[in-house]
Image 1 (tube, rainbow, N blue to C red):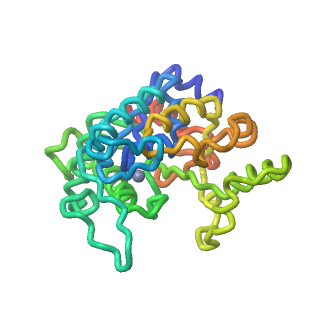
Image 2 (cartoon, rainbow, N blue to C red):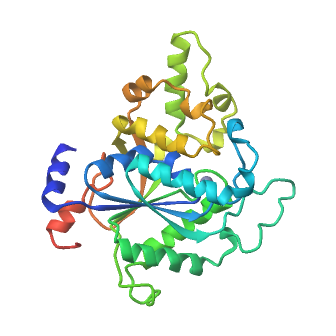
Length: 306
Ligand SMILES: [Zn+2]
């Protein structure tokens, strides 16, 4: 890893773009990695596809008069604080939150919401941003959305479509000059091995693990995402920034919840990485990786990209 850092210093900063469905997703999925790359002098942009307008108040302490009424505005303020905590840029793509449909049968998605917008419309909007920001690496969710929310699944679809289209001059010719993204990753947060490791640590001190319930209900079909991970980025030093960003989303995150349960010292000592899956690459790299930009410096040096 040190050698690639040296090379990067020579060629200058690279650009990382993470595509997220709602404000707060960036702070719970790969946040410390983004803070690390920003601190290393790279440009990091979070693109938030929707305004999170249909989010509920998930923190009892924030269930106050007047908050629900001005949710879109509150979430913009929270997002600005979170981006500042991570040291990253952020922009809104302007689509409307589809909400998480509940019931049996599931109700139809609200008209005009993000997941109902034709894919070519949302793809063109994202391609425009890709061609403007010119990321070397994109980060999105896996094909299941990482979590079964229609906006998360759409996030995957639109990101993959934009990765393919942005470099193709024939596609969306009115959305800027072509830019070829070198790599695209899925971010993986719900790693069973990590929960088991911390649960064992709780057992050692005779306390109940905050993950006990999740682990007891774990769907064996869901397996262990660790088998799909190609890339682990060491970023424990940036976990406090991740937590600060999460807390900035005060309506969405309960500060007494499971996100903050595990002692920071355990996290930094026992599992100081965040996990990613290399979904597609146009540069040569060797798996496993420890750096999302692995292989890109060599491609730039060879004049394959800029
Ligand atoms: Zn979300």
